[in-house]
Image (spheres, rainbow, N blue to C red):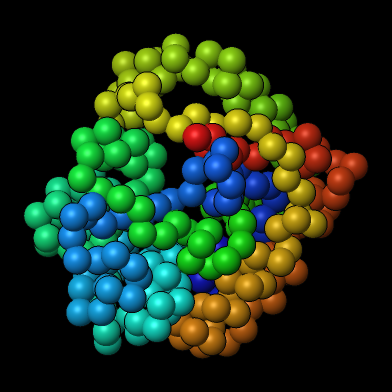
Length: 251
């Protein structure tokens, strides 16, 4: 979203889907290394390689933030290498990469296999909870012109979320059978839970991430006006957004 706004794409955030959140009860994208390997702290990544799912993606940003926290300059002191999530575990175990990025259900599958341990999480890398996935609407079809369409999407998402939470085992099985989920369903995977989320809680995180992308990573050529990214018409507490479910991954 920040990249799109920097390039002049006129889009608005109208809702939050899920967060990267700290806490023992929540899951945050995790960077892992070999349990018996030489990397004990992020500082040990000097001269190594960190696997991310794509360059200039959220996984890349978190990896670079984790490196910078330890005094490691990405692309100079450590390499950032793009690869798919399914191959991260074997790449770490065989030494092709020093650390890899793990999201669910791959995290739980690799923990079950053993031999890997946490180095840091996405939240630990940037230092605060932040939005992971948002719903975007193009300005050509703003929500204030189509309020019924925008409001209609919220009950559907809430209903699906509530069904999933109430029928987790069956829902996982149905997703697996449908072919929509490429990875084998596991009973150890973290499960999502509902949490209220409003734009007022979100406003700090995009500003911080935008500043980090501009000043530390130099991914942006100029500042991005973060408040203009948020559609205040749909994010007001007395509108449908107040009832929209945000997903956190529960341990």
